[in-house]
Length: 269
Image (cartoon, rainbow, N blue to C red; front, side, top):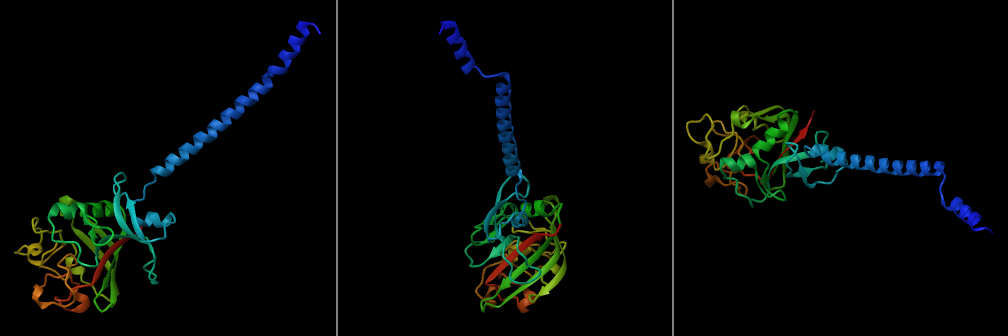
């Protein structure tokens, strides 16, 4: 066979047709577009940061524990989420715990800046922080539930259909309403519309410094019916001078401390 014929045959066998080339290009473009859409989808998912435990609950997180939330949209905050129900219609999970006492391991007699930012250990006792509470409730409606347990393992709760905290310029004023009794009584109504006070930031209307007198930080008035951030006392102790972690309407006694107190909020809208 002449050399020229052999070269022509070789050329025909190794050179792709224009139609084949276009097909390869289209396939490569399709693969690229699929990869690009996948990357965009993953990026979008990463930008969806949970504002609170309600968001996590709705996304399928049903196990109580420690999670990070984004009250301001960009800075993560570690928090304990209570995802399980105790059987009541009002308690369906998705609660963001803003305060918890359980063993006296954390000192709650703290200055203003710590109550503003938050403190403690989310695995046990902690305070979420007034600024975080404000950021959560400023544009959303939340309900509040206060769970109590005494040293005889008796339990009760107080439920409020509306809870919010104003900004720092307004003293982190408390607004709470819509009480429903779960056996604990309403000790928080007395503190409604009060500014938050600490020993170094006295904003209560009393002539004394309530936070300094009762060794805590709270929305004191003249001075308290509830003192959940007071001294952790083991049951009844009349020697504490009403400084204990009490909920007066439940025990009708200012000297009885709670074994555990949990304040938790859940978004309504």
